[in-house]
Image (cartoon, rainbow, N blue to C red):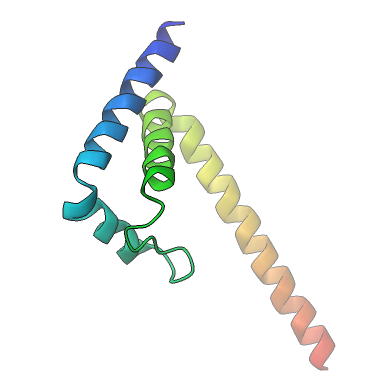
Amino acid sequence: MTIFLIWVVAFVLIAYFANKRWESGVSQGLDKMLPSVLKSHGDNRYMWIAAIAVLGATTLIRPVDVLLVAILLALIGLAVFKLANWASNKVTH
């Protein structure tokens, strides 16, 4: 229960500060990092704030779990990329 309460406090604080600084930097920083399809351009403010707060609070509480998930997703992405390259080479020859 203590971990959950710490997570909720971290979530609320991250969401509050992201919402407070949305116009002055968070939105522009987010748009710099995302591909054009996902850019917020200031829209979907609360969805992005919630996503940032969930990721931030989870990273504060369980950093190793987040790191392992990121590594796993990178390995799966690499395998899919290599498999797609292999399949496209087989189709063209």
